[in-house]
Image (tube, rainbow, N blue to C red):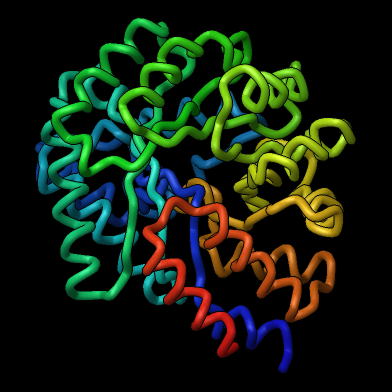
Length: 332
C-alpha cells in the first residue's frame, strides 16, 4: 500500500491545534457580519493574501487581530464546529484542542462565553460526527504571570471540561520559568501540563530544559531544537515526554518544515507527532502536514503509522479511547 493511501486511511490523533487558528476567512466574514463589524478586506482572497509571516512575532499580530470577530457563545461554537467537521473529514478520531481565554477576556469577552461555546461543539462533535476531543487551556506568555494565575483560578469551576494547561504566544523574553508557580498550582488542581518551545527561538534548548527539569511538563509543543542536546533527548525518552510538531507552520516562521529533524528524533526513539497548529493561517490541516513530511522525506507506511501510535500514546485520552484507536491502527 502506498504512503499516500495510508495517509488517507490512517485514523488520526491531533495534539497541537489552536482553535482560534482554525478561523478560516469565509467564517471570519460571516462572524463579522453577524456582529456588525467591518473587516478591512473585500474578499476571502484579500484576507489570505494578507497572511505574510516571516517569524513568530509577525504571525501573532495577524492571529490576535483575527480574533476580534469572536464575540458570542455562538461564534465560539461555530468556530469549533467548523474545525471538528474538517478534522473528521480527514480521519481525525481524537483531538486535543488548545484555546486562549486571555486573548478574549483581555478584550472584554467573558471566560464563560468562550468555553461554553467550545464545549457545546465538542459534545455535538462526539454525538454527530464521532470525534472525541479534550480541551487544553493555554496561558499567553507575553502577559504577566499574575494574569495567568487569575485565569487558572477562573477556570476551576469548569475543571471537568479542561484536561490540561499549556503556554503559548511570544517566547522572546518569556521563559517557562516565568510561569513556574502557575504551573505548580495547575498541577495541584489536577491539570496535566504542556508548554510551547517554539522552533529556533532564543535560548530554545534552555527553555526545553526548564520544561523538563524545572516545571515537570507531561509533554512539549514543538520542541525540535532538543535535537542539539543528546542529554535532553535521553531525558525525554526516560520520562516518556513526547513532542507535538507542526511542519507546515514551521516553514512559515523558520527556515523550513524541520521534517529532517522530526525524522531524526523519530529514529532516536523520541515520541514525535505531526499536527497542524494554526491551519487557517498556514494552509494545512493534519493530512496536509503528514503529506508534507512524507513528500520531503519519503516516509514509509510504517513511519506514518508510528507517528499516529506516538500521538495516541502521549495523548491525554481516556484508556478506552486509546484502546479503540490502537485497534484501528492495528487494522491498518
